[in-house]
Length: 192
Image (tube, rainbow, N blue to C red; front, side, top):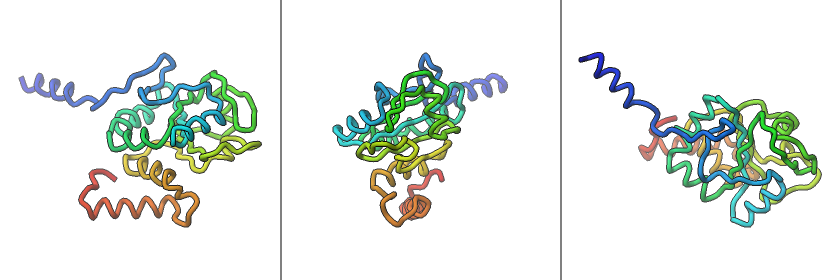
């Protein structure tokens, strides 16, 4: 009976939110944008919607991508902020879909990842409000977040970019530390 109760508890303690998996093996959010992956066009469309463009590189079987979807993007505080302020386009680190870089190069997702120097998944790339000409995505990016992080680092990076912190004197790490201290003082820090 005790063994049965233990198995039942394990079954009930599964992931809080199972992320949907697409045909490409990537975890999906219904609010991710599906585009032709022309980065300049996507920046313009995002701006027309009053948002900023973000590219998220993921790969099939990535445990960190799964954690990002199931633990971070499933949190309404995180997802609501991103949906309100950013247009998110998912890229497959090893995919073959056509991509048009800001400099006009036509690539596949996997050759774009290689050209731009992205080797970790997830990698989140924040683009400027207007599409610059003659430079690559990697050169144009205002910030890049390689790898998986906890809720507050993740959300604070999106907030820092939204507030254009990259234009000021407060480095992201200083901004993040300040926000963490404010959350701690307000009794809101449930995870660091």
